[in-house]
Length: 176
Length: 176
DNA sequence: TACCGCATGTAAACGGTTACATGATTAC
DNA sequence: GTAATCATGTAACCGTTTACATGCGGTA
Image (cartoon, rainbow over all chains, first blue to last red; front, side, top):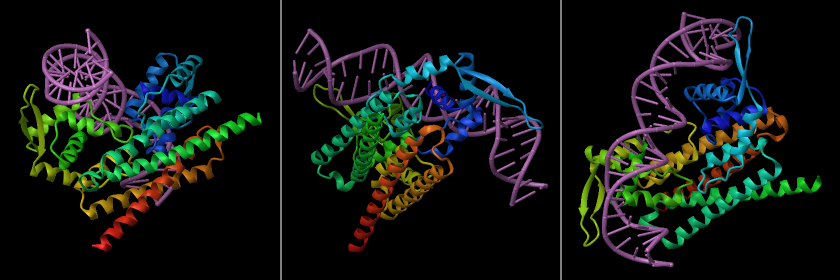
């Protein structure tokens, strides 16, 4: 039921059609799972059923009408609840980014918490990789050393970005 | 059937039990999809059926026997074929790393090709994000700007790493 | 004329996870 | 004693993709 929250999050910004939801994600493909229509439309019907969204049919001359969905009060609340649920520990990049994409629905504190949690996790991942290098002296001729190296580089870059983002958040808070 | 190639790739390094396959991936959770036993053991049975792997039952006194799987000639060939298939264009980090993990089964040229393809893709992704910043002047108050920024940071780090890895590969080739 | 973008949907198939079942050994 | 690790497996369930179906408007 994850796709439902993704939809809800996107609808928070502005009302959209199913087609819009998908196309707004298209150039973020590599960072986020883009749902197929085969899961998107049924999910929208389900959300409507559950009164998480409302439907406005916008007729257009000549062209067929657009079905524009808007998030409701209870939809907003459901998203909020999901967002403030604790994150599990070994989240992938896609899982992290998907939630981050919904950050507009976060409070400033919620966002800071989220980034701090991620910072902790990513630091742990980096440490685990470093330990692996020490314990396994380049086993079987560089077999997976590429992956370890890559992981180290990515984790470091992410940590840097997170610290940066967190610092800017603090500055904003101080200014206000 | 992707999990089958993952197994085949890991067995290329050394013979393993199903349990070993899973645990060897465990601290790479965030970079690779770790299969559950519910898909791992059936996959192993399928590979055995198709003669991609062989089974050696290793008895141990007291403890129950271990079922150690080894890759066969045809398993190796199947993996090779899959590995040299063209990569599709919007590969996620996990998809990239999973293949990279199997890099031991690559020829030097195959590996260089693979990294170069990834470099091209990641550069494209970064460009797309940069274009997005220009065309959409921070729409709806920093809504998704965090994601764009994050993507930019990660893509840049990855490009740097790829260029570095590629350079080292060339050095090695020149030395030999 | 033919293809691409817009736009919405359904049904079958697929790949995977969850939960369950079992059992021994080692470490706290 | 009891929790964790090692070790193997099955069956039901579930969410998603793939393939199909349809149709209009603009463009090459």
